[in-house]
Length: 164
Image (cartoon, rainbow, N blue to C red):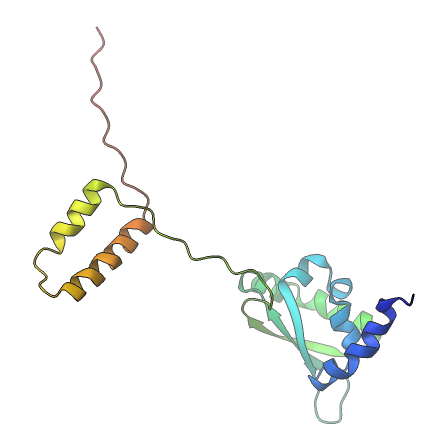
């Protein structure tokens, strides 16, 4: 059996090259180039150069928004590692685009908590003067969502017994 790892870059290079990143090996080995921690939060999109140039390019990176400040702070180190991978000064700048990476899990929407009986009564009382049933229903749904996103009200403290 032939190892698939040796064939992947040959197969991927033409496809990735059409995207503007002729250096397909960099994408395939991104974690080895920048390290596992940065590779989890970044994805190289394309490497662009000036007309007729193949040095001092700009690497376009998709970056998880929360990691963007760290990537910006570590930019000189990242560029040094990329250029070490290529063996020449291929990259001079990083251009960051913030957002979720493809294939990243998306958090399910949080459903609001059920309202307490007191909250429900207050909400219903505040909607009593609304005649339009559709508007009233929409405002009730909105009120339940807003109130349900807040922590439940604290239970009133029981009066303390006096000690003798």
